[in-house]
Length: 265
Image (cartoon, rainbow, N blue to C red; front, side, top):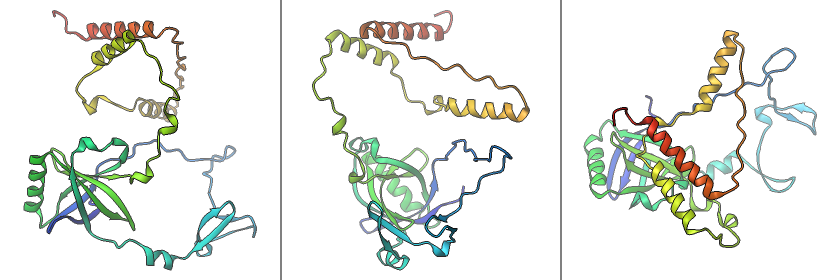
């Protein structure tokens, strides 16, 4: 695994040299766009409709559209002058409880390994964070952009998760019900029972991308020249009575549990 960034975790007067590695990988199946007639990959070119010609990289400038169709041009020199300094530091600002941060803030994760000269400081920080049960809220600069981040302890190493700033999270207030919805006590009781019957420990390995697996299987069949049978679309059934749907769901869970129960119990 190749490190993406080398620097240090900084808190107080302590510096902990670290190397950062990607913790996730994008496994989306990507398609090329071909010309239907000859199956040649389509090229996407930069074209100016006013001058009626293609333009090169040297002919392009950055601009901000402050009104529809009106722009203010910003030069690369101006951007460089305002750019956030490329620091090599993960600056810890606070230590907090993970439960206090809503998951909506997290969007990209990395692993942090000790730097070549920072093993003792790294493991000291890791043990101290384990002992307190805290995670660190920090700032880090990546690609000329300052990010909010969270550093926390994993069984194998420290991890860093990039976070959205609060003003980047949209308000959900417009989606709130306009009036209180009346729910019967028996419905709440049965829904709670259904949740409890489906509750279990989180085991990440049990969750797989079925769509991607079926898509890759279809592609392999096409490569092999086999006929492809498309699955039938499932029609969602109409839920006429909420209580009946809850009862049916509980019965289905119980039947599934019996089917998975070892024989002889």
